[in-house]
Amino acid sequence: RTRSRTMLLRCAGAVSGAVDVGDVATVGELVVCLAKRCACDAGELKVIAGGRLLPASETTTLESLGFSATTRLVVSRVRRDPAIEAQAKKEALEQARADRLGRIEKAAETLANRAGGHGHRFELEDQDGDGLAGVGENDRKALVTGLTLHQKGRLLLDGGDFADALGVMELAEEAFAVADPALTANLDNVPILHLDAAWAQFREFRRVTSDQRNQQTSAAETAETLAAGARRLRLCREGFARAHGPNLERLRAVHGGCAPELGLYVRLELLEGVLFLRAGDFVAARGKLVAARDKRDTLTRVVRPEAIGALLSMGIDTSEATRALRFCDGNVAAAAAHVMDARAKAETAAKAAAARRETERATRRFGRTAKGALVDLNALASMESMGFLRALAAEALRATENNSQSALDALAFDRDGMEMAAAAAAAAAERADARREARKRRRVSADVEEADDGEDGDEDVSDMHTRLSDENVDPHTALVGMGFDSEMAQAALDAAGGHAIAAAEALTLAGEDSETGSETGSGSDESDESETSDAAADDDNTERDLVEAGKMCDDPLSAYDVDVTEAGAAIDEFLAMIPNQDEK
Image (cartoon, rainbow, N blue to C red; front, top):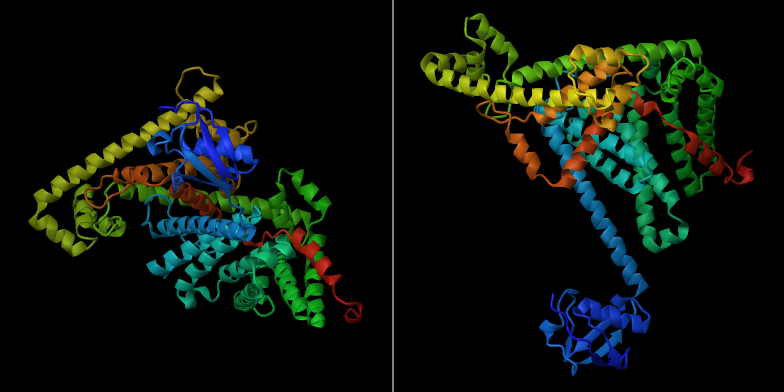
């Protein structure tokens, strides 16, 4: 850039007299130079030259403004209003938070709207892993969006980001509200969401000091927050009564008389007690807090340190041990059997999921209909039984939105067109297969380099299975060495109950799903690559976060794994606040 000559500028105001500004060349450099003379921040100065306020752009050159040694400056110092600055900062933070929540909501809706096999698709299952029948597509989207957002909110809550956690959970509440009430009425997912949202409110309320709260919120806003919390607790209590039974009889029938859900009720009754305490109803507050304390003590009794230690010595991790002891009323032997059974079920579920993905991947070879649906396998099998070639029948079904009669008509009257389209679809499928094989080869190569310290060589699938079966090799380390992301590898291991081979298969299929795009038409799987390349980085990162959060929904019992340490301390704290005369 062209720099001005060293010059003296005559100034008046906050800076007076002749000021040597050196060889500054831009407005920004000039203002910084003058701020040093005033011993203040550059943002506090306003500089007028030739009757005009200097532009805000710090890169504007002095030469372009006609500065010379005869230029006269008037420098004024504007003291900032702390209240205005605080309000501006608050508004900026709120806008940034709104932007984050918007990206999360958009990504959740994108995931929920995906058709089967398109990238990551989350399906609805009961606690036994069986798919929920009779759920319409709109209800499925609403429930998947709600579940995914709820899990993301829980992750934020566990990370101490209470305000954002509450914002995400509010979006989850909106998503569940779209679903058919008859479908959600007897699910405990919705009341658990209300409880988690109320817990996030409580944690954020306690995080902010009284002075900060008085500065940032009005009495009306505080009252509105408390009212929202009370409404959530009421909905939670009503939802638990429907889903668990008025006296928890439905849960007892499912869990065999044990009480793994007590952690939820510890939080619920603590928060209900706090509301009664704020309202001045000390008798009701004490009743709720004592009930919460009793449940906390029950959990403490069944999850004893020595029991945890015994299970850890069997190779069971702390989270598995804690859950199992809650489900088995503290019986160590029964808890160990519970963990083994849970791992076996998880492994079976992982293999079944892998088989479903394999079927979907095979179906994707035929492409999608104009409305985005995959080829109907039942209709395809029926047409094959009539003697039609599989690829030709699939193309006819794809072109006719899976209408079997229309597909038969198309083959009867436009067989040449169907054969050409089927050939194009087969060519596109071969290109997709080539990309998948290249990806597998890269992973195998990376695994070999990690294991052999840089030596060249190839490793087939059976060798990798042998390595993953080796008890002396840490499964997570092995999966990372194969090229999988560390966090995704751990999530896959958790979902597969620690079974490394099942986790590797799930990760490989998931990677192929995300790499293999889909388009309506000829069956080409190349369109998603351009969409991904055009997407914003923030949206991509948000979607990946939600994919990982959604995978954690695979464990339907995780909602019962409530750590009552924080709630337990709060119970004792609030019980101590009740006046002595009301403790009698």
